[in-house]
Length: 471
Image (cartoon, rainbow, N blue to C red; front, side):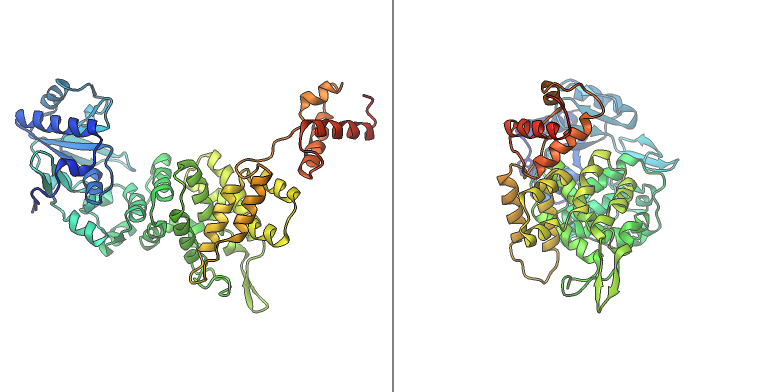
């Protein structure tokens, strides 16, 4: 049964930008004048109830056929009809999609294996039944203020429960990964029946970009990524990511890790990372995946020795399993190459601080990881992810950042000062000897032999003289 809540949500409560609010009112009035009803549906309603800003709208129009709807909208708005065959019209220059209620019949495999039929005379309850979760199956009438909730989405939202709408959930395997990131974003616990249904589903040829897209939302937008990964494990879907399965029950030394096994530690680390995101999606994506993968090689390196669990070399051994795991997610090469060095070096802030390392060591570390600020973020989350150990503010990270900042290397790798053109200026002809000479100059630069071009040229002249070059 539909359970409307009248005047619970005035249009102004949606928190829309002025242009979207004005367009929403106009569309709703124009559709009503033509004999139809325009409802806001999906995530926009959920976000408004959560008090989150809404910056895009999905509208579903009941009572008007596709041609009539397009005619009504085109009187006031410029439309993009590229999705017309699926019953979707986009309002150009505004983040508004307008669609008819539709049925989706499963005819093939994967996320795209559906035949879509629009039906303007479908009832709201049936139309909402095709949605994934109850919290996404609510609708809102902007003209009356009614919140229409045929599947109990508001009840579940208030109770922090993630529950599938109907048996149709099982037709689209992407919904399991969507459940993963939604549990993390909205801090939800999955209903037992949803976990049971998800456990019967498989990857079923999901498009590569769709898989990564859900993982990206987990990392960049999840308030508690641990809840998303917990959903993945309880639904049995960690079986598609064996690098994660191996973390479960992998023991750790309780003195250093009283929180438990590697899986538990990793969940704490991801939540610590999420607490301190910087709001740059790319930087957060790199650091978040590095946090997820930082101990990925512990299962293959852990053994019991002299009364303690030890994982020697797990950071260096993390290279291959990190690449393999990210390949399963269809991560872009650029991301992989940014994440792997952070996994390999994630213990270095502690080690260099303890050793009171030299500027040369810090320069070489910056060369390997590209950005020391990223590395410190990973190490800081790793350090925080060990409750109930007390938090000491992570002095090792502060020390390394201050040292790197003094060297102007906190957010960049060192760049060679002496270049090939300088060797040419000194009278050398380009050839095979250039590579070794430039490498030697760069190594000396990292060791602190010089800091500017004048010093670099002086060093280079001496190097060439030592090697028998006539200048």
